[in-house]
Image (spheres, rainbow, N blue to C red):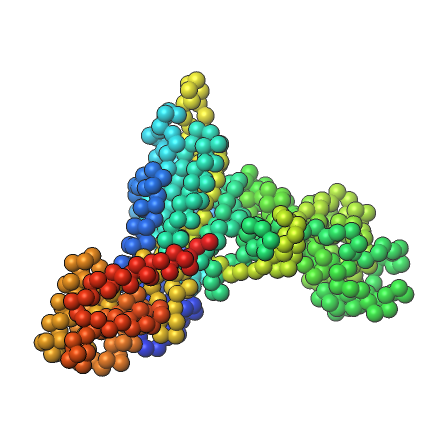
Length: 613
Ligand code: ATP
Ligand code: MG
């Protein structure tokens, strides 16, 4: 491919609205172009990388017998109503109405009615495809003899993300590989889960990126068991804790926090006053310092303060409940754990004004004591703790001496807090958690019966009895992964593409394209390399300085650069440069294909040694 004909515009300056390296470099390298917030065009170079990654995914899934199909991007509301997610998916689901529904809406408005537009939404853009695939399988699979089955697609998804950012990493429109498996029993679904887990390890290892499978929360999609695959990068949006003594690695949303051992709390004492006047004391540190009595003239340690959170939980059947969570003052609440403990489908913090009206106190003085109709949870780090401070549900007052068992009848202790770096590992009990940042590039879920039950996806077993199928689902963010690979592979000059997804593998830079002899050699080398099976971009642009060409080549970051210039050719040589190591090899133009092959083998060996885990 001649670069003079390629659709590409490189930029010297970093675009102002690009926040992370992959976005900056891919925009500067003319690979992606923003069309709207979170919506990008993949220009030719980026599209080549994306396609290559898709092929890696296809090859590895084929080894496990997965079948590829393609579902629509526009989905009818009915299917989502059947699964119950029409109601629960939230605003990430872009809903709209078609021509027919619009006509109905217009008719009712013409009659003077003022219907809510949302009533007419009858379609959405697919953010994920459990409903559609379940519908396909329930219509086409009847017998246990057809199971198990794993079906996947590589398709454009749309999620109306609250904060689209980071280029391809958190777009609103993006490409996902989503696979769904169907089984006659649980054991078979478990086998497939681990088969996909291993396929994902192969896929990300082939990219040569550093990644970790991590135990994760199953989130809004529901389900019993899940791992996320994270590419490790400082710019990652997820916090991961990994034990330094065993394999336990998990998303912090899920990481078990250790209970504290007896004796890690202060000693119990009699409550001297039921509450203290503590005007202006809203923070935990002030709370600790402000709690002075004869035994504690300098106040309390912060570990004896408590903090309180009030949530409204909504359940799958539409009912709601108030949930309170009490934590030690220096701990952070993990709302995912609270939500999972009560089994809610959705949970939100009670809005401040409502919470003030409900508790009768301003923020900073709310507490768990005496609240009616609240399911009260206490973090298990506080088991055995009795002399805590807490807001008194009266502005400017705190209680002193909270004993959860005595003062919060019916409360339950549970793991509610965010685990932290340095906490003892709950699995091996010996190691401690270390913190990493990760970019979630894939996830495997065991879904169980959630969709097959609600949507009636059943099969006949050997005895002719009807049973719901056990399901799993498995996603990979295709475009996000390509960006994540850039997050791990760049330097001050630009991208350093891992060989397997480099848009082109060799960049021939012709320094004197107007000189027929030089351009002749460059074109000959291009042909030789292409004949040997390499993908080559030939920078044949005229009227550019060598410096500008090299700058562009470094920015685009293909693994190998082959420089052809009049100066070198005088001595009969061209130069092969490794983008990562910057090592340069002088060689005869006729030897280019053999030397490029040798360089590829070395690069692939290094990649295997560096990647994965
Ligand atoms: P996140 O927590 O990052 O929002 P998710 O857990 O909601 O992602 P899944 O439903 O598991 O995403 O989707 C499968 C994969 O699709 C993810 O692992 C991720 O790689 C990719 N993905 C999800 N949302 C986006 C997005 N907004 N932009 C690009 N890729 C995405
Ligand atoms: Mg996910």
